[in-house]
Image (tube, rainbow, N blue to C red; front, side, top):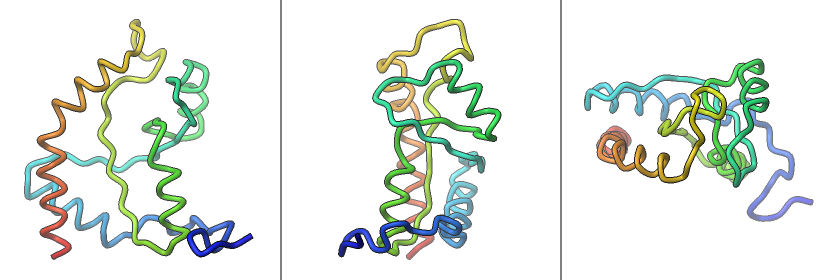
Length: 130
């Protein structure tokens, strides 16, 4: 059933990402000298990393990035009528793409390296929004 926080129960996701916000994010990134790439994000529930077979399936389905978050938040925000722009920071290669095991430490280390750029991008986006 519909609830005050989740209405409608089955939201249409056709236009869940706001084009204006995405364009503003791209302008902010350009002004900061940050490379942004558009792609297709596929989410798996986690909290485990994906298997090599799941990564192959995601690639067949057209995914360019895989993660455990973002999608549930986008669905919820869309259902609440919020404008949405999703930004992802790629922190590691997916399972089976390299001959090493994935670790949370690797992800955290890469996120730390990227945090300064992400902060600059978010500040630039906030300036764009005004």
